[in-house]
Length: 214
Length: 222
Image 1 (cartoon, rainbow over the protein chains, first blue to last red):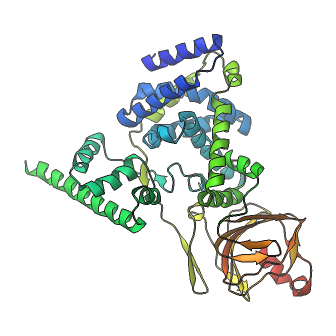
Image 2: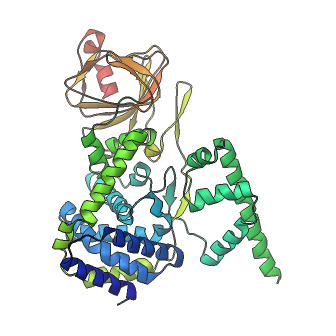
Image 3: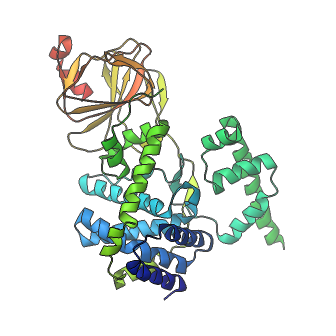
């Protein structure tokens, strides 16, 4: 048993005796696990999340689909989204439970749609975007080393470009939100972002070539 | 200024993911444009999440955390994948009709929109969602165009995406969510032209004039 799992088990056992809901503590713990999954790909943290959510999702999905294997599919899909999208969660936007709920709702929505129609389409992320005004696609993210390099290069950017990149990628604000927030025209935000990304890309390529020269 | 909103029950069902794709997309577009409904949906979503994941009721039901071996195997399976989902800006689709080009909202971006066909100033393009009797379309009306007075057996949802139109109940602006059923009769017309998303559950029933005689018009709009 992982340490995280043990802590959760203890929480839940005492929860049975003590009916006072410890939602705030739960939220803090769940958010901390999400951060660990996001930053460190921490399996123990994921196990903690899984133990909290999976049985509940299983039960809800079972009511909805009245079918064990479909219920398991909802659990599998939802939890693997949690694993792959944890970095998109931000505590300022709401409780971790709400975030996981929206993922589960989207998974169920697309699955029900597939059962009812001949179509193999997923509309849920267009209808309820996890990141406002943005969408999430299944692309391979650069590995951690590269991510750290990006962070280092980011600091070398001019302040006005840094602001935009940080807002867009780290605070997950939409370009529209950034424009409002920074009191800039949308076009300016877009061009700063483009410029900054161009520079980052260039620096990463130079770095690669430098390593090869060594 | 948006004046017409989905009723509470629709917002709740939307937040719970219980509505058909057509209506969900329409409400999503409205919500994106309407901070009031956006706020309400966020609250409904939170309530639902609490009900599922945090209520005392849920804890009562929980056996002292039984996770079967199938579920445990799932953890390894999931964490084997080292990739993270990457955020990209969505590409939006646009449609052109009679020389006007419109960018479609995000909620419609992956949907397949058919070709525009029309009668007079009214053009319609079907959005193929395969939802049985619920038909979803984009409807464009050229400046000065109108739709003959009609009523509905089922419901007719019109979400105004661009331009304006008015009927005897008033003038509508982009984002307005207009839900009509058999209790209503109306005769919408537009001065400057408009583009709408329509979701209709049954054929329109024309109540007077040439619309009554002109059957193709009915099938154009349903």
